[in-house]
Image (cartoon, rainbow, N blue to C red; front, side, top):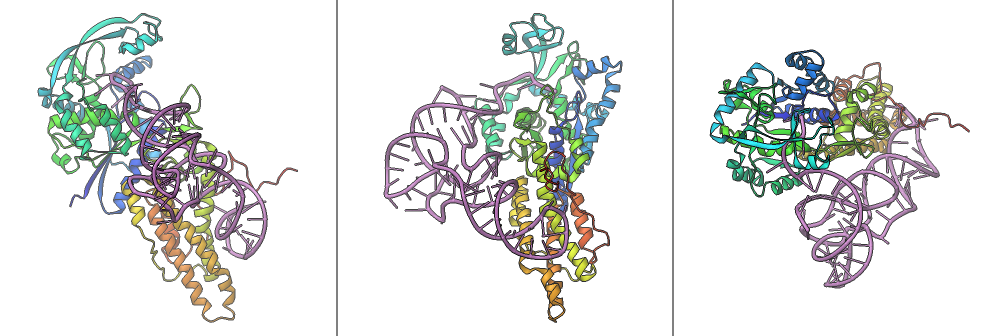
Length: 495
RNA sequence: CGCGGGGUGGAGCAGUCUGGUCAGCUCGCGUGGCUCAUAACCACGAGGUCGUAGGUUCAAAUCCUACCCCCGCAACCA
């Protein structure tokens, strides 16, 4: 049985700071990974950084560093971010790794039959050192907005990858779900895009316009452009080509990508793989963007949300909770501090946290903390698993929460506090009470199991609390109330 | 007529393929209950012409037609 699974995340360009979109990538992949591990699978989970390109070279020059020196520090915040959101990644790849660079050149050579040289013509700004599309030129009335200089019509030599060689194969793979694009509407979008075939893509730049990158083999005047360099990380990180262990993990089971980079992953990347004679990834999970208060996140608007700030204030599990339940996995989602805090206080605090608290507290109060024989929860895991399999994490949470609600209702119905009182007069009450409480503990353990992929720390605390048979002396609330962005209902109303 | 997604009580959504059992869920709001618990939990309730206008049908949120509005994509924009 194929027990080895592989999940990848897009590697961000290090020119810039990690943002919440990167965090979402890491989080989604991590949830899936933890779920699979919980089910006994072996999972490789890759993350990494894209470190070549002009922008990095320019940044480096500004700081008086070599590009490599710059990259050596610029990738660290991304690594820190992945760790901050609790990503249990197994591999971190940098495109400046020696092995990666060598592998990229090897890949180029393998693709030679599909590579040709051609002349690219377009509008160039000498200030930006890059080409602009006709549309952009038109939009800016023919001169570069950054440099106030007219665009020049230039031509340069580029190597091209003949993606068109693979048009039919790619389309067929998408249509048949051999390479499944999730969600379905992204698949439609893509099929529409490639219905007339896929276009060839330029995969190199002259050294003069791209100084920082992997040289094209046998042509020192050309440097490999981002596509082959960055996309191939998904296999080079596994050791491709020399370490045959890669075969145990490739093809990837899931590749997590943002909606903005779907087409690179669904067109160029498959073309590269097909050219190499490698199988295509089984699934591309396309997630949406996160808005803040209904607006796009942008630095100029000043509505940038720092995942670190959320985590430092509310805790890691609270962050993971909101972004996996209230940001739909496959569509755009909306973040506001008010929504976040309300979900934290009401759902995590009241529903789950309080349930754990009241159960533990009753066991302590009525049975000196001794739980007795725990009845395993019997909730039907089918719908939960189905939701997990199709990356409907919000639906998985709905399942978990319906269990939380049921348990609260159950406790309300059987009223353990009354049974406890009845013990003086009723000889059967003692046993009945023990049964009720151990049933509750069992249900909570099952809830904890379902929370493992999402809220690992919370799940662990719940396990520790109930599975040893004895409730520890000190009970600390799982999610203490925090009112920084919403009104505190406990506050004395000002008259 | 570029392509795709969507418009359901104050907010966020499900239901639409396979018409009736649909007007549902969560949050918020109101009333009551309870006291084990993090002012929590439980019950009940108010609130919607299911974007608009036509049509098909015994019956439409669900099918058909037209229109309005929002959003995404439209290939080198990491």
